[in-house]
Image (cartoon, rainbow over all chains, first blue to last red):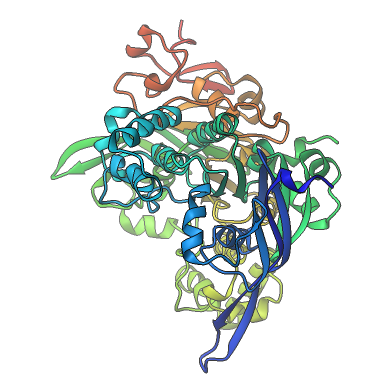
Length: 269
Length: 317
C-alpha cells in the first residue's frame, strides 16, 4: 500500500441506518443506507463514485461533508479524525472541504446577487479586506467563464450551465483541498454537460484539489475519474482504476452496469 | 404511415400569433420502425410529439399551418370526437415522467382496465385477463399481485413498464415515447429499450422515441431526426447520422457525450454558448463554429441523398 501522507481522505467502516415509520401503526423499519463502507482518496485524485438511485452514493457524500453523522465508522481528513470534531473545530476545517450539488439553482440563495453569494464564504472564513475579496472573486470568475459584468445579476437570470459555473466558483474561492461533487452535471443539457466536465478537468489541473465525483452515469465517471468505486445497496462492491473496472470487472453488478451502457452493441473486447 | 408536412406550432395570445415554437417540421414515420427525435431542452421535440395527438400543455399553443397525415386522414382537420377515438387506440403517447403519469389513488388494475372500458366492449372477465396478459408482455413478475398495487408501491422501472402496457393495450399503430428512460437507472434503461425492440418485432408497432441521449439513439433507432430551436436541422438513417453527420450541431451533440471509447481525461469537444435560437435563417447561427455571413440569408432544407437531409448553408449550392 502507499504511504499515508499521500491520502487526503479516508473512510473506514462507515455505516449509516435510517429509521422510517413504515406502517399505519408506527411500526419502525430500518434501512441500511451504508454498510461498512471503506475507501480512500489520494491527493490530486478524482475518485468517481457510481451507483444507481438509492444505492447510498449521496449519503456517503453527505457524511464526508459532515452534513449528517454516521452511525459508526471514522473519517480521516489529512490524517485527522473528523468524525469526533465539534462544530467549532469543524468550522475551521470547512474551507478545505467544499461541495457542489446537483441542482445549481436551489443551491444558490435566490435573493442575493452573485457578487454577494461569492463574497459570503470569504467573509466568513478569511480576514481579507473587501478589495482583496473582490479581486479574488474576479480571478475565479474568469477561470470558470462567467462575465464580470454579470456579477450584480441574481441566480434566476442565468442559464443552468452558468449557475453551475457560479457554484463551482464559490467552491473554489476558499482553495479547498477536497471537493465533493454530487451529480454536478446531471441536470444540464448534453452540450452544456461537456463544457462543465471540461471545466472540472481544467480546474483540477490548475488547483490540484482532490475530488469525490458522484454520478449515475458510468460514461461520465469513466471520462473524468482516476479511479472508480462502484456502490450498490449501500456497499462498495468494487474499487479500481479505469482499466481494471472496464476490461476486467470482477463483481457481477459492475459487469451488469457496464453491459447496460447504451453503446454495448458497439463494444468489442 | 404518419406523415407530418410543413408543420408550424405557435403560441397565440388574444387571437394574435406571438411566437412560433416549432416551424416547418417534415417528418415521416413508416410502419414498424423506431424513429428517434433528438434535441436538447427547448428544441421543440416534445411539442412535435404532442402535435400528433393534438394535446398541448396550454390552450394558447396552436397548430398554425401544415398537415399531419395519418392513414389518409389529416389529423389537424379531425373533430374533437374523432381525436378522442384516435388517442390511445391508434396513437398512444407515453408522457415524460412515469410517476406523475399514473393516478396515485387508483390501483394499477383500475387504471389499466379503464382503457378497455373506454375503447372496447369486453366483459369484466375478459378485461381482467387482458390486463394480466399485458403485464406478462411487459415482463412484470407476479402480475396478479401487481394489479392490486398502487403506483407508489412500484419502482420507477415497473411504473414505466405499466405505462408501456397501457400503450400497447389496444395495439396502436404508433407509440410516442417522450424520454422514456431519463428518470430510470442505467441497468433498467437497458431493459426498457430491449422491451421496445421486442414489441416492435412482435406487434409491428412504430415508435417515435423522443430523447436527448445519443447513446439510446445508437442502440435503438432506425431513422433519426435532430432538432434545434424548433427546426429539424438534420435527418438520416442511424448509420448516416453517426458516420457522416454534416450539421455542426449534430456533430457537436455526438461528441459532447463521453463514450465508452473516448480517452479519459481528454477535453471533450463542446458546443460553445447555451441553447439560444438565432434570429437568422439558421437557428444554430450564434453557436456555430463554421458559420459564414451567407448563413444569415434564407436557405432551404436539402437532401444530400435520399436518406440524409440537412438544414445547413454549407450544403446548399
